[in-house]
Length: 314
Image (tube, rainbow, N blue to C red; front, side, top):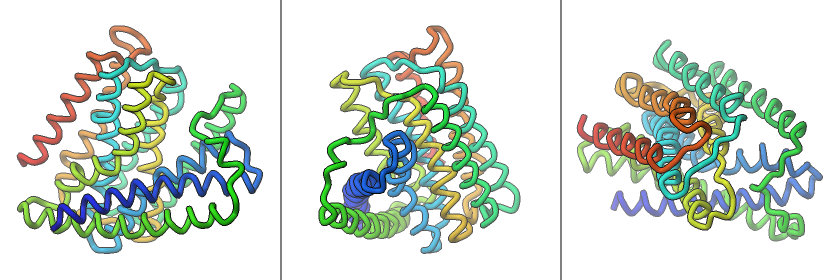
């Protein structure tokens, strides 16, 4: 039964996230917020809602390993699984903004998270505020840079500008309800599954739960790669990792401090996350600069499989 709860929870999170994104964008248009700001902030916040609800629900339910493992595992999956498979299907061109802003911020936040967790084995209220504040600064810099470069924002659906108030409120209610029940069922199922398989909650969270919450990014990237309609942005995946640390863990810690219960999170998992993040720089520059081709994608994906196997083997 636990696997049923996990699957139902994941389905509701995907549906809820989609409805929340649509409702948030429609509301932003009505509030006369610029398309650039909507794409950089509103869409990013809304697409991080599943991870946020899962981590918050887990922290409140007394399962901090799932709260932390979900984010650390999602960040690993975004690079190893999503980026790896996408690059295997269709080579990716990397823009210069990747190493000038996005990658350094992701790397800095990953290292800061490690030291926050290591000191006192707890992510507390003030550390949550520090993480969330860094996100606000990052977004301000990102929006200013994008405005200067006059970049187009592909993530925003212009047709949502015509959405009626009734439809917008309905989407908001459906999204909120689906996210609430989805996160509750996923956390419940994950705890039951860990017990029935005889593994820790941390193992389930950094693998199955993390893959589940990364499914929307994987589906969107694979479809775009297969259709070859537009360049898949490495910046979006890196941005998702930044949001996971600064927004998901930042807000969760501000509401409910997150304890480190499994030492493996700090001795193994977080180093896998740092390793995948750091490996992107040599992969982007060597041997062919600013291109992530099929061989590089295969290397990243194989490394992810090794991570999953080694996690279950512990």
